[in-house]
Image (tube, rainbow, N blue to C red; front, side, top):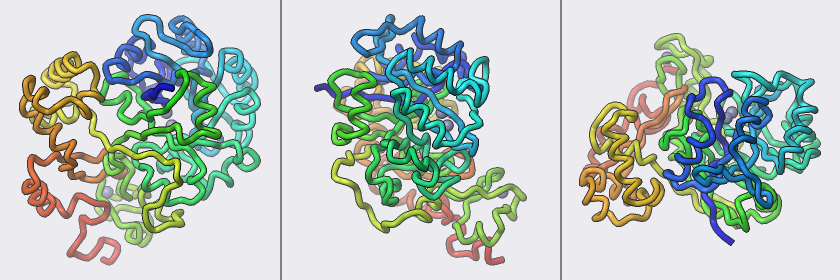
Length: 422
Ligand SMILES: [Zn+2]
Ligand SMILES: [Zn+2]
Ligand SMILES: [Zn+2]
């Protein structure tokens, strides 16, 4: 058996707000550069995207392979249900796609631009039942985010999926949570955790910014199903951003991004006194509300969670430029990835001295990243968090002191009255 690095949640050209480069050959090429083996097609219920997918993939023993660059794909999509809960699903073949299209058509529009992720006037229970009947597997997408997730609208998977709850075998963690947080909730201990990018553009700081390493006989649906349902120990590694990088990690104002401790937000009736914006409950506080455990605890099959920073972001910090899309960042990225084969390899495995031959300041940042000299300004209210990579242990200690008021959730009012107390 072989290990495959998989990004199982992305969107295609017709999802709305997606890059025009979100086409299979480009995704396939970028996946190779990133070091990913298996991608979700995304948006497979959408007629236009389905035709595009059929045109570019060839099937061989249940594996779907993009012809030009050789990345494997699994047929997959995302649905928004009647309660605004998002679900991701995977299907074995094009027949099951057609079956779902037939059954879902009466619940909402599936085709056309902007409908890659359809909104269906059906409950989670109905949707899950139909997917499972068609031979597919399904689970909640970005399970903790405050707008479109199972735990923002329900207190448990059971209360969301009802009679279909026994058939939910995985949950997608989303950018603002990791295994540490998700396993504080007891119900999640029987589920596989997926770390996926939910990318809307193919660039390597989006695609694969989170991914999962799975041991399989071949990169295909039937293997994924077996792993999620009964051989979860074959999930070898979750890789993702530090949850503090997520844009809904802390409870914060969705207009001026001021962070608030949960108690203050409640006292303020979720209204920001600074700008009159709405305070949005953060993933961290939501999980702590539902948590049974107060300290780290995992089921025995749970793999390690590796916190990663996209290489382009590290290069941006090393070169000290504002824009991650700038030519300087892109050129350095390409230089490193062509020298070392893939982004993941460059970040995790290549000896620092070899990276230094190409760019010394990037090598220094990667070394600090590997030695975990990283602080985070936590995100919230829709604003992404920010990593700060420190050059030495002394640098880290100094910045920790300097930035103590902005690093964590709600600590921006440390030493003063919280706004809720005024
Ligand atoms: Zn979603
Ligand atoms: Zn999505
Ligand atoms: Zn505000």
